[in-house]
Length: 328
Image 1: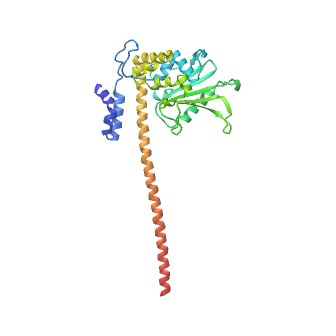
Image 2 (image 1 turned 90 degrees about the horizontal axis):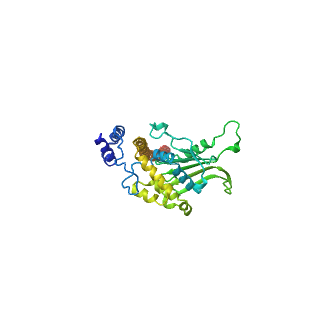
C-alpha cells in the first residue's frame, strides 16, 4: 500500500512513459487502493507553522467545510466581496449545510454554499478549479434556481435578491481578463439597470495582479491570495494583521487535522484528478478530430478539383472527337 501511495505521488512524472491505456488503468488502481495519510504533526496552531498545506481552500470540500465551520470567516469573506463593513452583517445562515466528515457520493456532492444574509439576501458561493467550459450556463442555472423561492400565495415583491459568486482557478474569458467582475441585467442601449435582484460575480484566482484599488481596499485580493496559498508560511504571511483571514487560516488548520475531513477532501481531489484526466483526453481527441476533419476537407477539396479537371478533360476529348469527325 505504501508503494502504491509513493507511486501516486510520482505518477505525473512517470505517466509520460506509459502507454495511454495502461496509464489510465494504473491511475485508477492507485486512486482506489491507496489510503489517506493522516496529518503528520497535529501540533497546536501557531504563527511558526511551516511546510505544504495538504488540503487548501481550492479543494471545494475544504472551502465548504471552512465556511460552514467558521461564521467569522464567512462574515469576513462576504463583507469583503459585497464592500460592506463587517458590522453591517447581522446574521449569516448556511441553508444547505453538509455533515462534516460524512461519506458523500461524487454525484451527490453539492458544490455550492448557499448563505442567507441578514435574512433578506441570498448568496451562492462556489469554488471551481477545473474549467468545464460551462460556467456561464452553470452559474445562471444556480442563480435562477435560488431566485425561484416563492411559495404559493406569496407576492413577487417578496423575492429576495440573489448573488452568485464563483471563485475560479482559471480565466473565464481569456479575451477579457478581470480579477473581480460583476454582472447584472442592463439595457443594452444605455446600460440602465433592469433589476438589482440578480447579480453574478466572478473572482479570477489566476489574475490577482489585476485587482483594482477598490478590490484591494476591501481586501478581496487578500482572500484570493489566501485561497491560492499552498504552504503555511505563505498563508500566514497573507493572513497576518487581519482577524478574519487569520480565523479562516486557523479553521483550515483545524480541518486539516481532522482525519474524516481529510478523507472527504482526498475523495474530492481524486474526483478532480479524474475530471482533469477526462478533460485532457477530450481536448486531445477534439484536437485529433479537428485535424482529421481538416484533412478530410482538404481531401474533399482535392477530389472536387480532380473531378472538375476530369470533367474539363472529358469535355476537351469530346470536342476533339467532334473535330476529328468533321475532317473525315
